[in-house]
Image (tube, rainbow, N blue to C red; front, side, top):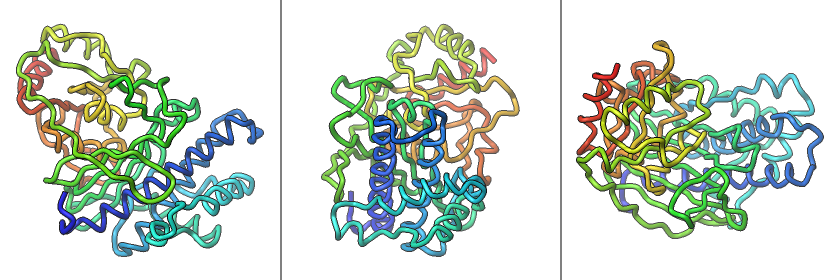
Length: 352
């Protein structure tokens, strides 16, 4: 990776702020495990979403004040619930990187009101064909996060509708088995960060509590042509996907099924393709009207593309990231090595 790349500063700040946000989420998980919170519902998850979004946008906004943000959360719930606001503020105001020089490159809200306004920058933003927008999902995988399983903190820069960089922090990711598993988690460390820079490849590093640790380049995916070499990642619990059609597609192709890897968080499925042994993800929606949120895919798509995969809708069309807060022009999705992607598009057309 070239340090003189025009997006080198953006990548450094993005990697640092994602690492800091993952520390925040881990801190909350430890508190929940110790019974520090009174409620057993999803309130801690909500706090993590709000707090991580506030820390990420605060850092990026200081470094690049003219950029827009597209985030999932708004401050409405915090403004109407003083207890929730106080818990979120405590988490935001107490989370810092241990390395002073790295922390100095970032920024944090200085007051509760500033925190609320920063969160709303994400709620108000859109990605478009003109300008730059940072797309973020502060906690992708709500249900598995609260269970202490796999989740991701996601950030991507989209410029003029094109992904320029993507950073995914996976605090519980454990690579000892070579497969991602919801229940095989990193209990001793801080997981991994997977990131990509357009045109330069995808990279992997361990995460820590201070400055950024060394990284290495991820090897591109094998360019397979035989459907028997397909290795699916899917989600048994997903309510928006038609898994019966996924099974039918695999059978039509003569590909192995069921999927070897099952992950709830959408962005983690891209990570499974990058470093978890899988090489294909297909999403055939249950409803014709279904469209994905942009923060569930931006960044992860770039990582897959930088490793030699083609990402498209079910008809084989490129995914357009310039249509606001959703992938409005994208019905379903196919992510697979470019060498076999066309065969998958044709197979989907036949079974549909």
